[in-house]
Each structure stands twice: as structure tokens, then as C-alpha cells.
Image (cartoon, rainbow, N blue to C red):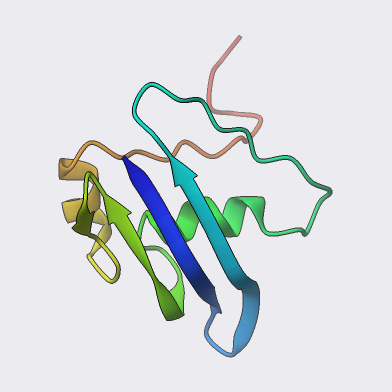
Length: 90
């Protein structure tokens, strides 16, 4: 379903992700665990098309989505909800 291969990405001139590979199959649950600053949010933002990809590939349902704009990625059924204090009122 979601396949990431040898992904290198970041923000302009600052590389944050180095050679990341991940494969999440249909009906699987994947958890990203790590300390602050380890690249968890950057990986999710990269899947959503919100960062700069230097190299590597992202595929969703077998189709390449590397470099697609966020609105097209969302139409494919991928979403990103960042954790901030004011997302839900309760």
C-alpha cells in the first residue's frame, strides 16, 4: 500500500531524512517512534508532499506519488493531522 525506498528529504538546504525505507501493507498498522528531532514528522510531511525530496521514491497502491502536490496526494486518500494542542477542543 505505502512503500518508501531510499528516501532523502528535508527543508531547502537542510537534509533531515537519510536513506529511509518503509513498507506498510494493506490492513497493517505502522508506528513511528523516536525522540524529538528524529524525523518522524518530517517523514509524514514528506509523504504528503510538504518537504523537498532530494532522492528516493514514494509509492501508494503501486503508483509513484513522489513529487506530487499535497492536494493530489490527499485525493488519493492519504491525510496528515499534526499533533498540536488546539486540534481538538477536549
